[in-house]
Image (tube, helix red, strand yellow):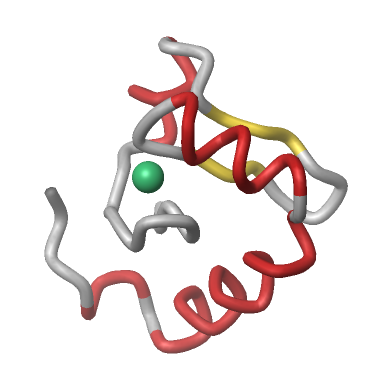
Length: 65
Ligand SMILES: [Zn+2]
């Protein structure tokens, strides 16, 4: 999953274990750290379009970290 705040690719399952995911009605977002999660939570609408775009272009196109 794309961390829309810093553009890092993160593993949703892994980050969920660390409490670094955020559930929203449309999907679950994952973040590299609490800082990015907090930034997203304060202004989700600013970052959601970026995730939509990333998913639309195909997540396999991006290298995993
Ligand atoms: Zn991040």
